[in-house]
Image (cartoon, rainbow over all chains, first blue to last red; front, side, top):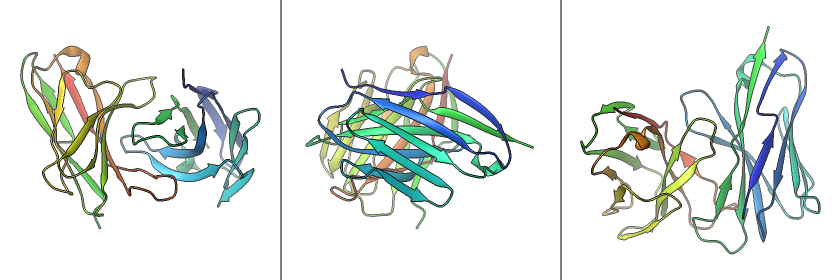
Length: 114
Length: 114
């Protein structure tokens, strides 16, 4: 069964600190992995996409990594800001899949405090 | 561009009532999707459409119906509301084959069935 597991479930950090969110998946065959940011009361917004051949990709203060061998991804947030408070969702797409072949993680809820 | 818009934002239904959740996108996307998001769970696909006149079931279609008469609109119909349908509903859209099919989400509709 295709699964995406994220950890931790929730996280509280001080503004300015760094943090790393984890995503482990069992989706096969793998196509790509996206990280979405979901602000409270809003829909998810894509941060970055990782394909099989990519190890690292950055989007501002967000850096995603992918290890396709171990089926793990991480999202590193540098110098956190209050506006980073949100849920971060890992979504894995299946190769050759139709529109239905996406598996969503349950998300990590991040709270950045003063 | 307004992107993906959803109405209403909030709704309370009594058991057995029916309603339609509206979704419109102005990005000329072929693919559209309906998801539900329950507390502590990943998004679950209800129905999706790959173009006007074409719809297909997702992971959790029971109790819902959809139609796609135009490229822009993809309404979701609940015929006999049940408490199990209390959830937050997200509509999304995407290009058919672009960058791993990034999905653009609407702001969501929070539905309570009592």
